[in-house]
Image (cartoon, rainbow, N blue to C red; front, side, top):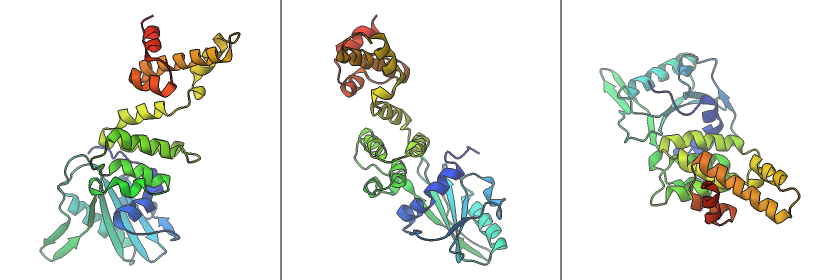
Length: 260
């Protein structure tokens, strides 16, 4: 079976937001206890999350990256495993984040068994719902939602520029990179990240400045920009026009340097 693209730690971080925006369940100010040790068999798969809420009910959250024709049996098995450990009410959610159209059976009605679980396909959620929220978790999850008629590059650009406003945003950028692979957006993510980096933070800026230390500041800064442009184009395969526009330099200067 293909490994899930989202780790258990990421799902725990996004747990409340996934349920809030996709299942209309608000867990703000609720006591959440993740039952990792109590339900080890459930937790064999990394994306399985079982949580006790306010010591009054259980939520089992399953993140699925691909179709599984036996998913309804797996979910029932999980339900039974949880029920063996607790008498609390259990609600189960399968969140599908895969690229293909979902093909899941969500209920069992056979013999003396009647069973069903809740199913949500993230691709059917309008990304505007999350893009309009003022928190980084929602912005990260938006990468999996329905862009409608929006240009994917514009959506990615908005998410990255918005995440930059938050302190300690490295973990959110990491989550975004991981999730973007499930929508084949990793190349756009990398390009936009590079174009949003202040060139003064890049090592080549210092190199350019050191080589031109005895020249005027503007000329030294310009040389650093050219050096960064070459790195961004050669190492990250970014378009010359995008790099030139971001750094505010003539693309012909970059082309000339590339041809040396």
